[in-house]
Length: 82
Image 1 (cartoon, rainbow, N blue to C red):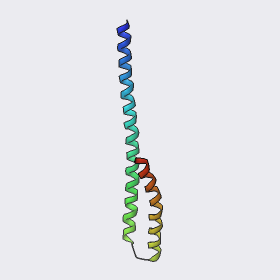
Image 2: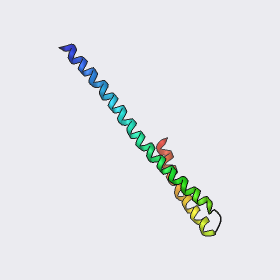
Image 3: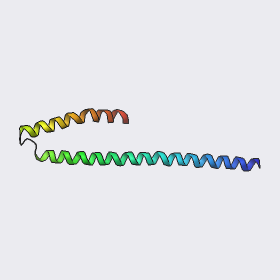
Image 4: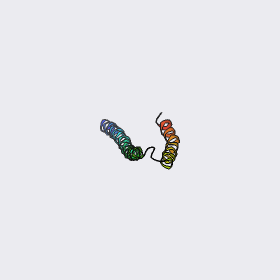
């Protein structure tokens, strides 16, 4: 009976550890998918901005504002991944 109980405890701990690993991987997968979506969106915006780059002072100001908005966000993301 004691051996059976010990075997059940060991089996439970292994399964619990595996479930925690799967949960962590699932969260990582969701975060990476979100990051991929954000990067694709930013890339599309940058490509669109590149098409009008320098056509007018207003376009240049818009691109500069967008760039300045990205800097703090990039810094925060860089700090959280370090």
